[in-house]
Structures are given as structure tokens and as C-alpha cells.
Amino acid sequence: MKLRCNRIGGGVAIYCHKKVKCVPLSNYEIGHVEAVWAEVTIENERVIVGSAYIPPGAVQQLSDFVSVLKKVQMTMIVFC
Image (cartoon, rainbow, N blue to C red):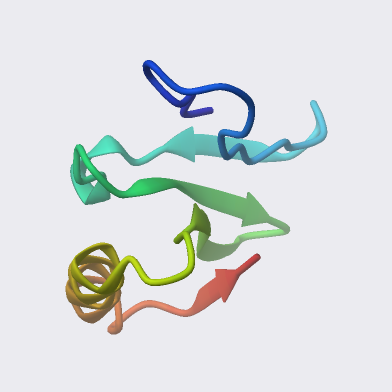
């Protein structure tokens, strides 16, 4: 989960069932981009899941987020 600092409301999170293996991936996080990442394993299938919020007009945040997506493009991505 990533909370907004010095701002009201919002935040992003990934919630997993207790029977699902879910490992947070902080290496894909960028300080000013509101996003979290996790490696989720279900029945020996591994995927990287991301959850993000990019406010309207936040061109730099969107650009930085696209850069992160490029880093994980070799792995199947499920984006919510």
C-alpha cells in the first residue's frame, strides 16, 4: 500500500487473499509516482501486478510510469 503524503484522500494498494503468495516489489517504485507493485504467484504461475494513480495532466508522472512499465515488460503484467 502507498499512501499520499501531505494530501487528503486517495492512495493505491494491492490486496491479495491470504492463500495467494504476494511479494511487494519496492524496486519498481518511484517516489513521486503513486504506484505499487507486487509479484503474485497462483498455482506456480507468477505475474507482476501494478496499481497506480496518475492525476489528469500529470505528464511527467505518466512519463516516469511508462519508464517503469518498460522495466517490467519482460514479465507478464496485470495492471489495475
